[in-house]
Length: 269
Image (cartoon, rainbow, N blue to C red; front, top):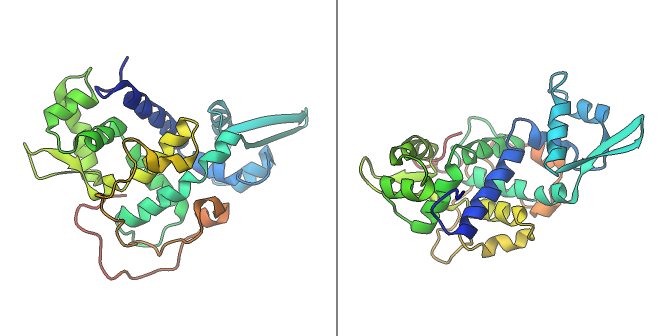
């Protein structure tokens, strides 16, 4: 059954990205992926590296990540078992710095500099709101849309009034903008700025190189799109995504004092 009223290839794209987000967003999953970003590790080594997890919480998460095809369990002997990234899991890691870049450019400025891993987790929370992907894709394709028209496209199998709770949440989150009740909806600057992230997630989900993200039929950047805003919460990180290491994502930059604050309506954490 179709997820949206958009063309079938776009509908399939939304479904794939929604599935990817469902794999990585559950609490601690990204941290476990990062803990395993080097050599394969035994269970106890992983447990020591993610010591904040309570007893019994690690094993089901490892099993879920293995079932998702992001990690693999290798039984060398009955007493020697290791966990490590699959090729697909490794290919997903360069998307994480793209999420950090978006968060530091668009999310509201925190009271303290945040480790990059927290920037990732805050961003994923916004992207996995119910029906968020369908609404964001629809607004990207159609531009300004009334609430009723948006409901007909993004959730065609539901009563059109059901669009308003998730839509209001996306407005509160700062990803969607409207001038007020009865006015059309459109992507905010932050919503448009998600293009590199959503394009990369789409490319990965389709088994394509991440370089294809800029050529995405919906989220590929066009000359008319606004340039990225100035860095707000932390100074920019210079290494290319492929050069990032686990320590980069768990550390944060020194406290800075930006010249200007985020505009009203910036995405909330």
